[in-house]
Image (cartoon, rainbow, N blue to C red):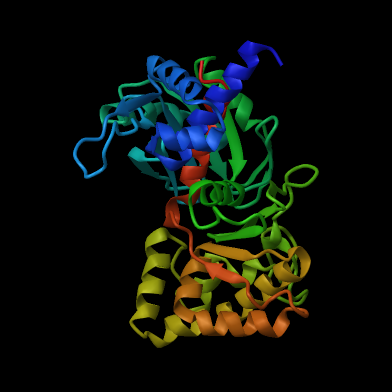
Length: 386
């Protein structure tokens, strides 16, 4: 490897540590990177000149000797734009190095947004993010989270059934609309949620983990042996369309009895006898009422807990993860009925696959997919800080 390539590699490594962990001392970076103090100092100086990190000298304290400089993401450094596409709204946020959401705009949609409409929404939101204090730095990438199958190499959506999209070249559409120096990256919402949690959240210490997300649909992000599992063309993790009961309700995919016909938010509203439209407010009200002991709301949560436990057990039998993180409505069901979920998991899990598995909530709450979208938008900068 040429010296220039080695230097770029080391710059990338150092910036990655500061991006994931925040402020670190030069001594900590020296230990982590297994480099000399002078080399780390030179790398930090290069990154500081690029406006990516800044140094502070700690003051005070009882320790004797020169304190090690603290290296942190530059407050006015570049920022990424994360976009989370849901059925009822689109969230666009500016995310700084270090993973902080500096500004956001939630754009309600009266109907399912079309791909070209999404591109316009994103472009229209960008000036407002800067005005809201995103950063004085440059935009270094746009990442988009979509509830559908995604070819991550091209950003093409294979199928996003709840959006009604099929074979949509969303990555190219965004790239054509953005300045050429700003890369656009598209990913599946469950995959990006898991990326955020694995990088800096509640899956950080796990090499075998599943993120189960429940919105209007149900999907899973999967990491096995530390490697994301996406399948041949991005369909891995579409567990919402595994059939639980062939005589069950009709799913919009054309099958009967898919998991999401029992666990999706529309199904939960129907189980509670709430005939209004599926909206964020109506779903939130359902879970608030369940927490307050409303009988009809609890009548929806109890069968959902059984189905959720069976779904988790199938994942454990197939993938044998050490942790399952539950986001969206799945997390709400877990919080309201953890004993019932865990009992169903134990009943349907084979052998030793179930005991010891942790069921956890996401560290980023409803923002996991948004933070993950920002994370992939930083990919190019982290790979080559120049």
